[in-house]
Image 1 (cartoon, rainbow, N blue to C red):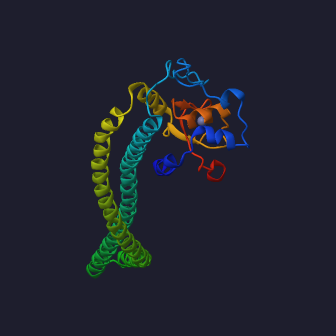
Image 2: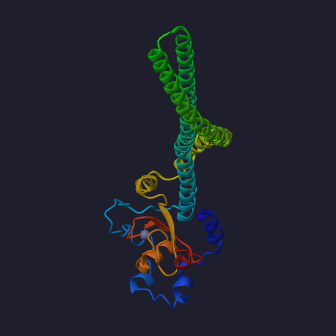
Length: 305
Ligand SMILES: [Zn+2]
């Protein structure tokens, strides 16, 4: 974006003297009205106050527009590298979240299946108990046929009645379990359906993530590979300053506008900073944030902020 703005700005930049004369809204201090010629003042240096080691000696015979162009090209590359790396690093956590969602779904299905198995197991147990009671009834009935004692016959009869009562209770429980089994079967079916749908969705998403990860990895390597060429094009001291700024800021190179406002920190810089920028004879940095500045009268930070 900056490059686009920059490209459109550079050819249109008026020469400093004309601007100085016409800019009535920003009257310049006397010193700024007459910038020293390079040959007259060879120790001309930056006036930044943020403590960063700037340029102890001025860079002469360097086209500052060219330097800025190269820095912006490098900055754009670094921003792309950063964006790509950030996106690349976000893939694995997203994939892990997808897997966790799938795992949660599978756990719900497993729990439903376990509940269904428990109900089935209880139902079988009741069935066995009913069978056992029926066996007892058959045994007591046989004993009744065989006994000749009236009391024993009566006692066996009571046992048979007790068994039948127990069977009725068991059958009531069986009915309750059958109802429960039907409910659990619905839960299991729904959980299966949901798990299948989610799995299909997650598989598709993970597939896309895998493909995107491959693309990003390749893109990242390509971007990184071409960076050294862009960096080598920048003069070494300028590059060192840029690299130092890059460690703490993603936009080491920003514009300053006609209102002397820095595009990085949005703070007002001294008029001289803007004047120096427009003269394009030295590398200028923001006295507040330390970013490298270039002039752009098309930037309205108040609107974009
Ligand atoms: Zn700034």
